Length: 203
Image 1 (cartoon, rainbow, N blue to C red):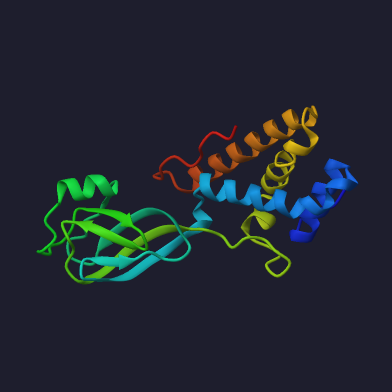
Image 2: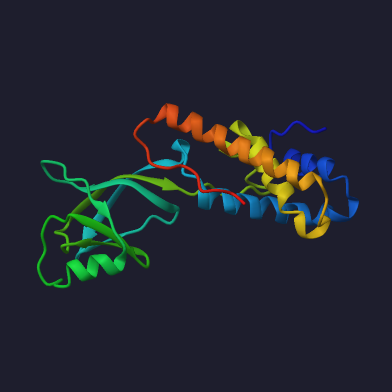
């Protein structure tokens, strides 16, 4: 059984667990699908990235690797943390956009952050969760391969369900994935006691 240390050894481990030669060509897709689901449902401390973007004409560019916002504020004294709201709520509460002020709320509109009230020019700072680059033949490792390879393994194995159908191993892999994600939750909360919910239920 392969020890998982990289993209290639992850593929080997998935193949070993599946024990199906006819699924080898699908394994990269299983891994990709598992990664995408993990990145959409988990916000881990290793993904925390400093946010510092210019605000001009009431908007600020969203970083290309942006997943979710942890904290944000417009550079000013005293610091006023912005509240994340839906775009509909922002425009309902702050419909007039001709004047600018220090904002109270923030939302996303396409490729930009927008503010309520419309923000003065300045700098948007804070912390956001950045999406990790997908594993590939050229990007062979990431935080998961180094720290939680079992999460990738069981996630990828579950993606084989359409092919192996009623295989009883799926139930085992499902529970192992849930256990692995919950252990990440505990570890993350121990490191950051003030963070919000980490996981959504994986079913």
